[in-house]
Length: 157
Image 1: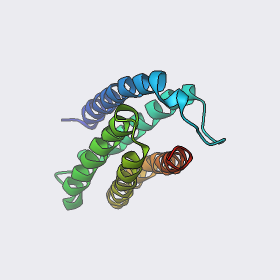
Image 2: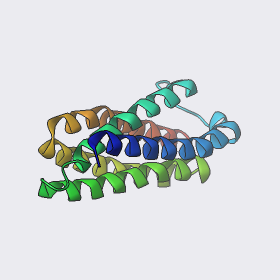
Image 3: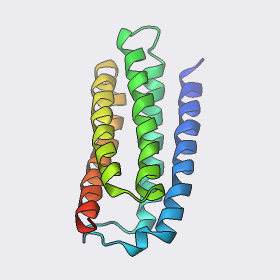
Image 4: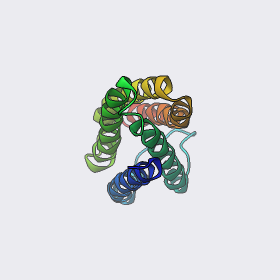
């Protein structure tokens, strides 16, 4: 399979996961999120969709680059396992925060997610610098999301 095909498959997968998460998120925003206290640095709701779309495309491209190295680099298989784990945890966060309406459980989970993203970044960076660089905005955004999640939990405990 060619690199472009692998990247396309991962873009479809990541955007599909993002779409599924957005359904839960939208329901939570309409029923619960708008009623809770949020910190002053909380971004407007409209910003999340474009940011996540771009991040999913970037990590999918990174994943495709690493997937393409599976036959030639012994770290690539491990890196793709971490990629899958962090993607699963990313999906679960929306269900915990917006679905269960539980910022504390979501906070615990996003800390684990951030650790998995960091490990994925480290592995990707060892395999291909471009793939590693493509993970940096995701790592930064989820770090911000963790701080936002913690602030929301604190303000509404």
